[in-house]
Length: 159
Image (cartoon, rainbow, N blue to C red; front, top):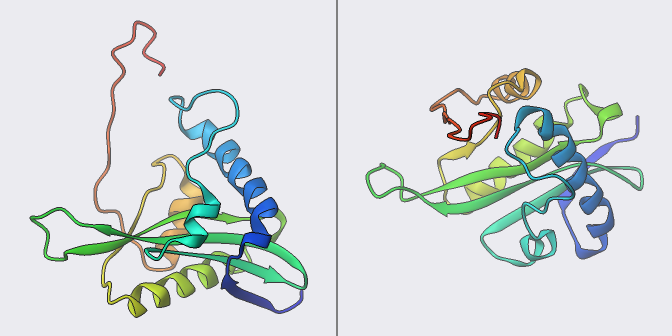
């Protein structure tokens, strides 16, 4: 495999990042029956690239982008010790490149970005049933903190 570099995303990367965004939605659908049918747009990638409170990075080997992730500075709840934290999102690695440590490289770059912005707390969300993602995040140092639970009041109880 060619050397993997992690670099800031640029607007020229949008086509690939849009493909990753939909692949991420498709991968998450089995874990979340509440997602609407059809294409979903969790966020505006072009806007994420432009704003100051977000660092969006891509993993690249040769001329191929093979993964991505972002770090977004959010205000924390007023009762927490830290005033702000970084939320990680848009974590994606092309399937045939998984298991090669690419997610770890992206997270390391996102941690550096957080440190450069004087943020000492990093959080992310992952579906409780997504055991592969849970293991990957635990492997790089994340630990479970709080589980969000839900209940449907629909007659069907499915959404």
